[in-house]
Image (cartoon, rainbow, N blue to C red; front, side):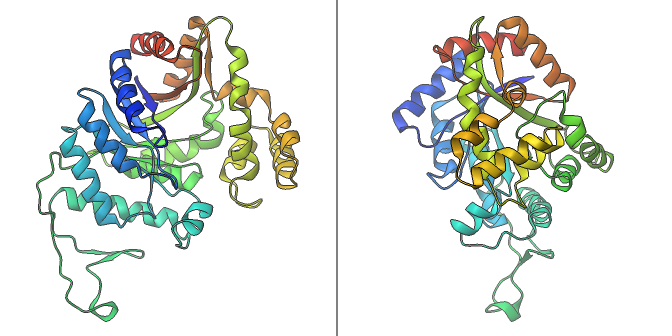
Length: 345
């Protein structure tokens, strides 16, 4: 099992340089950089490539709607080159609030777009001429839709690796099935290893049954807030407001992917109550109504014996990379202690 830590792109540049070096020394294996509608992840990943030597780098995640498939492929190939083969492309569909509200694009066909994008980026990395005719992407553009001057091109540079790992962030059954079928890995959210099978088990199994034998072993990246100690359980409450926002306010009442996951875990009444209260403007009441077992199940906070048991549960559920956010009083010391536990598995 590997240990990953995320870096918030809002962190000032000097602190990012310092954190990256400290993470490497602490035993972190992967640094992940998210992207929403702040600074782009690619700039930060390029910086990290220059100030690190060993740690792997991952976009966690970039939206499939934010760049053309060819630009995604070019960007990943460039980051893989400057990092000496340490890059993983994490992608996801994001949600309609960001895609339509920030990028100004219709949130349509996330499943079909994801499949075609993975096909296209792999064609680019193999340095084949890009000639793709799909339902969502046609490259080159047909002459009746443009000037007619477009022709199949291939990447000018030779990528360091002909197949860069692609991980897909997914929650819905069909999206999860797709990730297990065609991607190198999957990034779930609100993942509780003991309960995950009841929500995603059939989808993962269906995807793996169709998986190409030539793909690398299926990776799963999961985790949450982390602190190590005998008296740190109270730190789980720090994540209450954050998770309440996802369960109560993300998307619409009818299309909140996160709320559906909580319902799938068996907390149907609690998930409905949190959403109703939040959407009615009773944020404090919604936050208080979030079930405590959700906070415990999605975090890695406790003493070393507790954490060993939790990590074993993650490993038993197929998690290969545990990604954490240190929330304790001494985050680097916690990371060092936690890394020792992870690498001992």
